[in-house]
Image (spheres, rainbow, N blue to C red):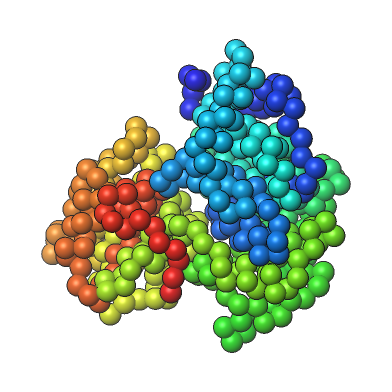
Length: 416
């Protein structure tokens, strides 16, 4: 449809949005950031659903089916509804060229405009300022954190990337930065825009004690359960989620028991997702150093008595060396896989990078193997793993897709 996969800018898509006459009367939340977007969106949707609200949720990418990207009231959009929206957007497009993500975003917005939910939650695809979801003026805009990723589109420093991500903030509307030490450019842009910026650790925070935690914002919520999504970073993400819920409390009142149920019932495939035990199989879409640091921390915290086997694949444009440096102390054997798209780094390239990082030398020369398909890499890891070992399949979303698609491991829910 469009000669380029990614073509930053909102001029073309805005024309089509106007033709479609898309408007929302309900609160809209836009969630950007380098990592934690999916978890933030999932928890927010579940808490509001537990409080009795219908939520329109748009996320990306999908793991198995395109329909996963567009949900109303927790349910994936069905084929018939989606195709109807495709036809409407295609007719409105005329001669305007749209990228895949732009077309998809218009389909989601059109579908939500028709479904009239109580709230809409939109996940940024890439960056913020020029991302398709930034067509909509959000009532609350969130940047979860800023780390180095997508350098060729967003810049090579946290300041440049922070500026791009802050583009979703709006004058007079609530804006969140869900981490400590925000980039100066992000804070500067929020001030210049006139957004009401609230920063994690300054305006709201969490207190941990005895396996429970407290949210402290304008009000305090004590003795909260740990989120069903695993890892300390999820309490961090949940703190920002509760700050969003608090910011919209006058329009979408939520009782504290709905918050507790929402935290306990959130499901999200591929975020330290434990598929089975003995040997344990863990899926994680950690594909940049910031996410790999979190994964490494979670792996060290839950160390098995046996070995750790890793199925790993990555896109060529990622900081693969940075990911390997963070993960290498956690992994005993590597099963490297090609991925089915041109942007991917080949398993052979990954092997060279591991060897350059000092893995697979001398007596350890057997610890790296190479596969064309993620499912084959997983099958080999399962053959070699003993009951007390664990297997972690991580890297690109395509790794999680590949290992669950043909291996009978179709993403059950998170369990611990």
